[in-house]
Length: 374
Image 1 (cartoon, rainbow, N blue to C red):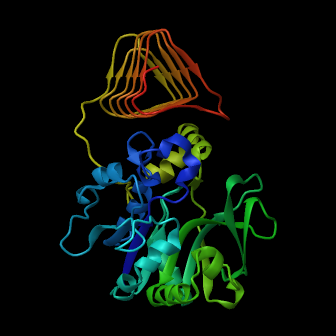
Image 2: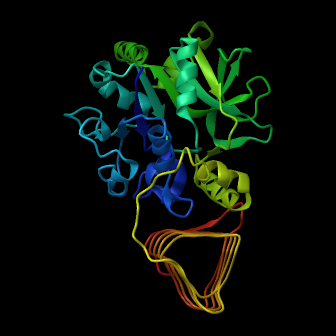
Image 3: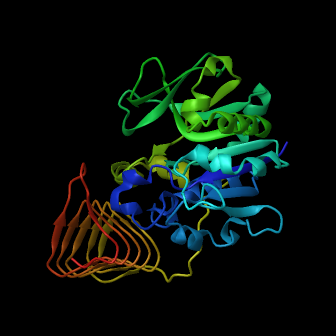
């Protein structure tokens, strides 16, 4: 049995406000030194999936720069490796993909010619470190056409984006699928946007989608009479953080600081390391008077002030007498002297002047666009 992978890089990008103004969802920085795609890509690489296609729609320059030839993921290979799929619906068209099915329909002949008998499809808006080998093994053991990766849905769940909820029988066979933005007592598993398909079955679905001009993989094909199909779920009980909008992104970042179990499950598994692009940066310099607590600090920073409960990416400078609290500062940000930064997400190369006070709220963080001087 062999497996290939497809990663969707652009879904839900309209929900991230200015954070995706000039980058795709997959390229959003997260966790001090990573990008969101690193989680989906590392999950596949750690499960020995070496033929991976990345579907890029638009604004993917920074994503291409991040992945390069795939060397940092051991994917710079003559056979297989990482491939970028054209952002256009058809070769002769200037129309971008807008959803999964459009992208897959244009890849029908490519999928039909695949030698791999199993295909993993993953979005980039779910943060987790999952053993896909276990999912694939269960998929084959059940003889399933489709296995949907889910997680137990908590009663306090809520989302601005409608999510797929799944009800199964005792053996994991799908009985019902519904969409909701809140917890549903009758459908207690939340789909986390990872599919495992039998390749021939997906090709069959795509032929049907082309014949009937279906527009949605989930609504028109998967949610249609699922109880009569050979569909199963794999319920993953480890740490999962959905990142479907800007508020989710900030919440997941702050949880990373406060939840040691989350950090261990994402970054502390030696058998499933999280890969990313390697930078040869100098160590962070903590000058006299610097104070750091409850924070994640990347290489190449210079800290002269106070950093509390914050995430600083590479090359950030915090000046004397300044306080950065409950904030996420992307690479190259500069905080001047005697400034206060609270509940702020600052994009790359933001300059915050001396004696400046900026404060959002933990329910409504303040966002500063790239290259802005405040």
